[in-house]
Image 1 (cartoon, rainbow, N blue to C red):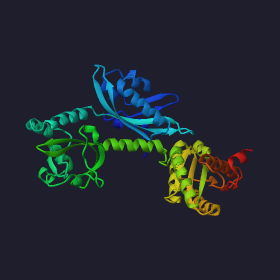
Image 2 (cartoon, rainbow, N blue to C red):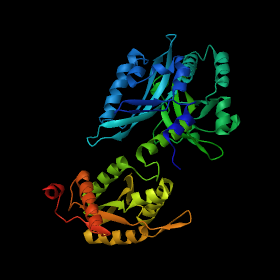
Image 3 (tube, one colour):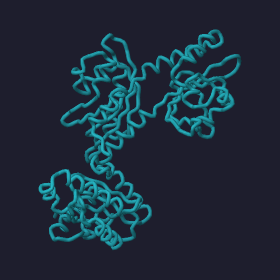
Image 4 (cartoon, helix red, strand yellow):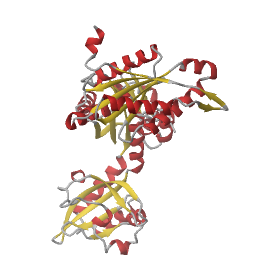
Length: 432
């Protein structure tokens, strides 16, 4: 089921500042209510990224700008950092911002960025207070225990050397489903998977050992969490205090955003961005193992007439059904994508030669050209397919796609089901 960007904003605006910035024409869409609640300011003031940057603490601003530039140029895949926002009363509010490039141009430069911001202010204050109290544990044990048990986040105190659990708060028992007495008989590895030789021992401050892991509950359910650790020495014993934060909602949000950035909302197929990644990987594998890759450009014949006669709702239904048929016709190791309109691409990998590619395409066409039953009607929809072969008819992703496109138009012009672009005929030669 496709989810519109507006629906996504509405769903998460109470928890996250979900936002999308499109460079041309410079449009920033975001959840204004979320930001307004933090800043207590007029939401109409935030009209652009520059306006938002003015709200970022001056010491954090350069860090964010640097990360945004690296993301835009493809030097990093995502942004994850904490920032301070300056509120109307001049106080600071800590947020966590995460972002990915949703679209890039042919040069790899980002044209659209999307992400989330979440308030971590209360969590930060709580961690800092607990850290300070943890350092004074010997002289302030009563005060520490009161704060420990009242904390909403699960907290586990363990022996830094053996990993055995020495103390927990009520929230840890509630979230994991284990009674306190049972937790005291466990070690940290029973609750959180750790690599061989890994330990939850930081260098003292709360952010020295922040890890993302899955918390294993007694019911068998696993929860995505972040674990913040700090150390303390008590009566010659080394203890590690672990504060656990549930990030499962944020993870689901980010997964939704990643899927929206890389998939077609109507059919659910990969879009042009994800197609380019798959094609590059397929070409690399083919070069390593001596196989060929067939890039097949598909266009539905007379699809405009279907929209005109039966309406766009019927046209959308046919596109979704066509996508489902295409996915069912190719192997799991192959890739299908929608470029837009009635244009699709599928990539066939690990083929021995061009003859094998055309043989597979013939079988796929037979499954695609069956009439569609829509609202009690039987509608014939045939397609034309153009094929280019790596490395014989193209040596780059762009060249392969261009030649497959030309081959498809040749097939359509000559009423052919498919046409294989002549081997050895690259784009430059075809243009000339």
